[in-house]
Amino acid sequence: MFSSDEKIAELTHLVREVREYVDLRLELARYDLTAKAIQLLSALCLGVIVLMVVAVAFLFLSFSLVQALHEWLHSESAAYLIVGGAYLVIAAMVYLLRRRLIYQPMARFIGHLFLKKDNQPTASGNAETTNDWRE
Image (tube, helix red, strand yellow):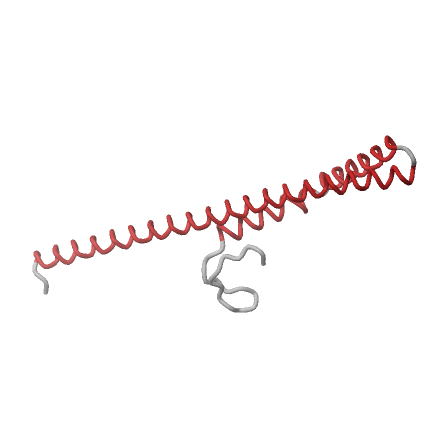
């Protein structure tokens, strides 16, 4: 059997190994959280940039539509009212469908980003190694 000193040395070694394992797991968790935060922030920045480009495009398209309606109706104020009314209808539709259009995709993206484990098998049976949120 082991002597008391050997048991203490073995226990000390075991405690040191467990502590090193826990430290490595914490460091891995920090790296994983950092990678996921970077992915979330890059998706947010991309969304803001796309939103700005789309807003500018809608601005120019709106003025083009107003000009076309002005030529057709011979009334600039009626053309602006029609375009403004169309945007109010679109805004109401987006508000009514906000759960399906905004909330659910965001919740799915964030849940997939933070809750999916790496190398988890997908529906096709293949293990994924990337964190591709566009699935």
